Image 1: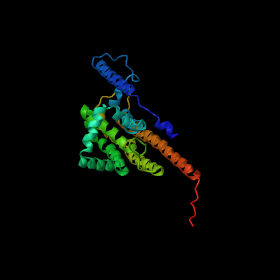
Image 2 (image 1 turned 90 degrees about the vertical axis):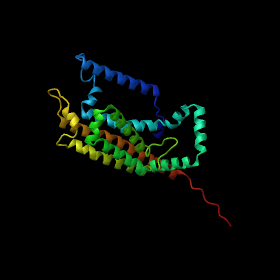
Image 3 (image 1 turned 60 degrees about the horizontal axis):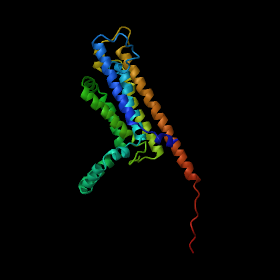
Image 4 (image 1 turned 90 degrees about the horizontal axis):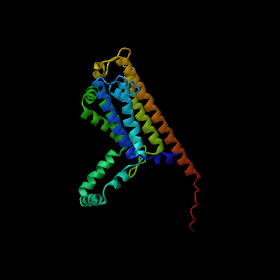
Length: 271
């Protein structure tokens, strides 16, 4: 089962192609709307465009950035392939420079140990979720392209930190045992579900940005949008966490069975 997951690979040309296609499509839709040429563009044609108009669509994007993309990146184990893609001369010169600086190696080692600690990775993930969903920062990201891009970058990095304690990745590996990884995932899911609950049972507008947007007659209200967004966040996150918890428990049981099946060799008796 685990070998199927670890054999997953990411094709850069496909990813770049999809990104370029998405950007071009979005630009074309905006241009068409600004110039009154979007009469034949229906809602299912421009779902990506409505990610900026509807909170629930934006939350799907955030879930993908934090829960899906980092998971797939780590399963693809891109660290060594990316390193090997660097020219050999550059790799050698950088390693030689590093080997000549003992203090720098110590600092890197300390930083690596700190940011590979399970509690730190878990904390970064939760803090990033809550901080970037504060109304002031969230609205600032929606109103500024640079801040928005930085927000998405933070989401991806937070997801990488979180999943690095669950998914083996070269040259790193999780410090936690399988049962502790399951507990780690459950605690992460519970902590993030608190934010989902706020959206699902909100009675007032959380983000002024969405309240200020013009809405067509018959469209969902701002509160309905918030409730749907909370439900999507809760369901999608819970499903992903539950699946991975089951995987961790399954791997733990497999490891336990292999250990119990290993014959115990009797120690030689010394006279």
